[in-house]
Image (tube, rainbow, N blue to C red):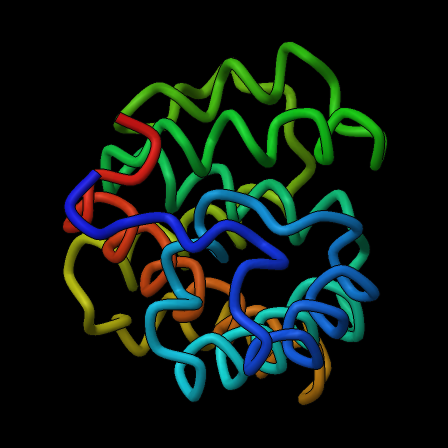
Length: 172
């Protein structure tokens, strides 16, 4: 790890922020213990990622599929390992979780057409950054406006998460 972990309860100025993180997350993970090195970043991170994870319109299973895919593409095993149980609890099959590890995604992956489309979008956003118009037209046809934004924001946010994890060696 490239930055020190801030042990919860050791800094009086962080009490309120730690309480908000605990209320939203149930614990203060190593990621958040690193983020506490910069309280303003930790606060903004918690608010944005909690909205992405807990208050968007996507089914939890679809959200977790794209989070897992981004983790694989960005070589962020800590993120994959953190979200695999959440995906399974949301109803994603163990076979689908394992299939996401294949790059490119195999045709035999047990995913619905909308799940495959979301994974294709995640692949484009993560690997190429630009999303081809033809692909986005399919996304528009399959998802309403809010779901489109929630899907794109989820992929974008978890690219940020995985890149921070990898850069700071969190979970290594």
